[in-house]
Length: 394
Image 1 (cartoon, rainbow, N blue to C red):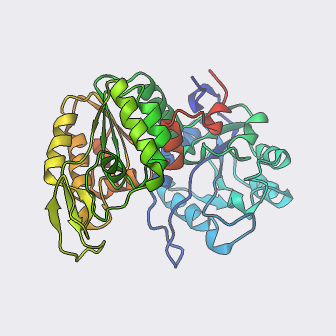
Image 2 (image 1 turned 180 degrees about the vertical axis):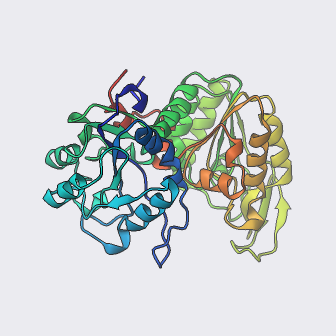
């Protein structure tokens, strides 16, 4: 168990919090989705309620170690001020004499400052010790609430913990609880739903889950590599030629471990990926010149029945090209099914899957919607994330 923000006396302290404010901006530099900012509010508000001075730090985009005005965190400071109902001071940089002066100028407890984009400095991604130490000088306690970056051994994530007492914020604590503890000791039956485009992205996830799950439901483009191995004609559907042996080995291993693997029995097919293309339900075979873009109605029914008895479900990867409305039925049906499983713990791996569930309006009906893309995947692979490992144990 890692220490959390609750384990520290915060009154009168400077609390340095690593958040994930890597939010999407439009051409006018307006935030188009503030989910990540909202997700950090409970931790920030808790520190303020305890009488702390809060100093926030985050990266935004990929500025490659130099200041890029379009990647400044100013729009975030503005939005955060609105959400908190109090002034958030935007610093001119993340380290240096000027920043120290700016932070000194803050009113006492209850004040909030946001350091400028960490990745404007090349030493952030290098996990440079002097840079980490300079960041640590801004606080008395360090709290990591940026799960989406916890798979990176960067200065603001891993290096800074060498110089300050450290723990997890509420968001990170929830990720550790669901993606870590729940999946280590899942309530059975345990089902995993995997989708997305590539087997190669999920190989280690599948290998890790095979030791724990009772069944794996595979959809999305990655299903075509498995179907191809089984001799199913997949028409022009995308598959990974160089991963056929891997898919074969996974199917073999699943059989040995008595893990049921369910693959699509029918598909929504089109001659080309275009929202206006003529669609056809085919299955299990796909005719030449056509490709699968979503699971079909019989598969939706099959997968739905397979999930009926599940007590733990983890879902990572959409069932089709959900961004196009016509090809989103399979993903929608899975999201809807999970929202109806009242007795089950439902965990949504971050990235596309979280975006997919949110776009359908089911985010509030899942036990946990992960905020990390790559971090969720690595956690599901059973990897130790540097940002979590570095925090103090209770």
